[in-house]
Length: 601
Image (cartoon, rainbow, N blue to C red; front, side, top):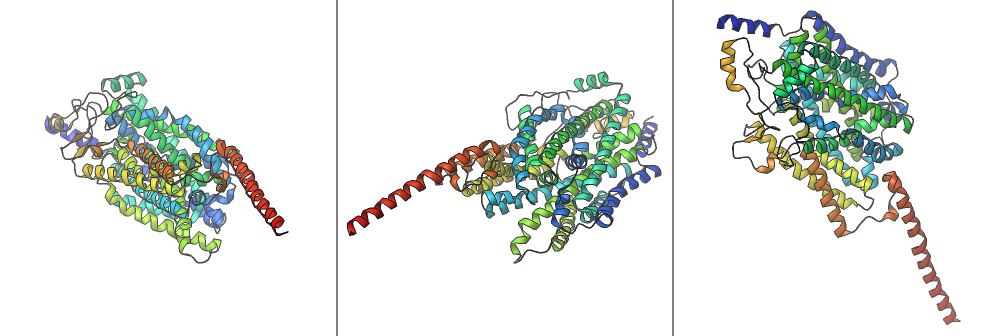
């Protein structure tokens, strides 16, 4: 009986692969972004100017920019990592949406007006205008490293998905995907990227919607899904535990993800680049709100898919049975499980997931190429190159950075939970970057010295924690077991017996943090508190330094560099400084001169 059951399990596993029609659909879906890049790079008109390559000539429309923003922010981390996060640790991550629209209001009120009015090729030019070149170059270097660290995570997650349904080696997949993305990003410029992203966003919407609808039917409806997740202790949003060393709570998720929203949408080069590509400021405001609605919708569906995963595998955990080995493989397994019998549908859905990764990678490479060019290469150039030379240089940068990211996939695969890894790696710099831009925009008295010391202190402290924590995770000294899982519903008695030792047993609120006793407490800080700590440390150090050495002279501050709500205050101060002190000094000198003339006479 055990032999027959084992054979049944093997046949189930063998059926979870693409057929020839799925491969055909997948190839066609990946070919289209390449053709779009060729169209905009060769037929539509070569991207031979910086404005064309980086900002689409500043005449882009609302719809493609909105869809491009969605595609660049909905990576495979959202489509694959969020459902796996819900399956393993519960729905606490949904708390991120409680403050979302408030945060977007802050971005559209404080950050967007400043950047849109300045119309800069790189948002880091702002820091040189507000502070000095040292602050600009330091911040630009940090964000470049952050993007380079994030892209391999995105590529790797998508490669895991394709590996699960094809059996092809992960590193062959990452190289192939990356070369396709590098090609159409290099050739097409921003227009190619934006229209490719538009197509990819539609694929993402369709994919996540189809999975949710089919999964809901298979699971027996919303009521049954809710019941199973509730019994499995997955439903959790308002865990109000204030302990910062707990992995996920209401506080860590809501505040940590809010700062990440500011980082990704308010000051990130790829976002600012798209906002300034629009011809009117009113268009940029419409885009940011439509983008928010679209992104929240996709992420909510992704989290619902996580509940579907648990409803399907609550009594036969695929991790425990070794059907999959990484969290990034879970959604592809589920897709093949519930829709593998519908020829072509799995290929379409997996293509949508791959498109999400390609959209994020292309947007990041396109924007970061401008940052590297403007903030680093131009320092060593004695004269300004022509637009054609600049465009060619940025294309070379895209190729080089893309290949570096492919190599870093070998490092990423050795780290832990995918969502936690992605947030941890970018959290080392995102908090510091959010601090320095916010310090300049909302605090007109901040000086370059305060900004720089706060920036360096922030990234040093958070980097120390993140590197220490990730090292402990890679070595197995720090682990985060998920909520309770079971194999009691598996059809094979042999599988039940072997896999039982690999199930989770925790039924409490939140999720446990387990160490071997050698991991310092500071390394156990919640990964979502990295960015929060970075911002707080930056402001504390920056303001302290400025109070000691002296505040910014408002008379020499350009009001366009601070948020609109404080510009009138600065202008009034400047009028005061420009009239009274100068007038008094002039009067004193005049009187002295008059007295001297009288004495000589």
